[in-house]
Image (cartoon, rainbow, N blue to C red):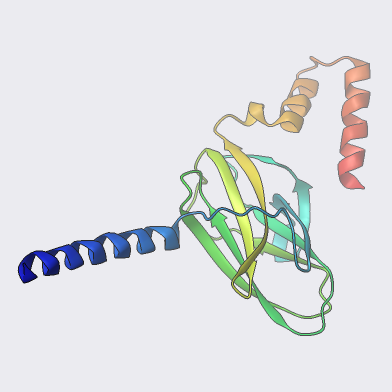
Length: 180
């Protein structure tokens, strides 16, 4: 009887340690869009030279693009804090983590992806954690075919003279909105 009980305890320990380890590396369920002092997240292509900010904000990237970044927007607080930016791949596994030491008066931060590349095709999630609590997340898609990126496809069509003048005007307005 004691041997059976001991075997049962060992099995329970193995199962619970496996579930604990798998939950540490997989994407958690984040119900809140944004909370705490995090007010927003956007993904895109970073400015050259690591100067901060993004040259393009997009929710669709391509597997052949090598520079990716997330920009976080914050309300100022009274003390310093650490913000953990976690990139989850389409399978829900942690692909990259960066802890940023935040100053109280910062209103934005830019984190460059430095994980393994190229990015896998599918839906990615970037989550932000402060003091052990998830404050928010954003999702974006990675596609194998650049023509699936809406703005890129329109620009390429324009370059191949497949757009009318009205369509070109619409694209110019759309680009202007991104620049504002």
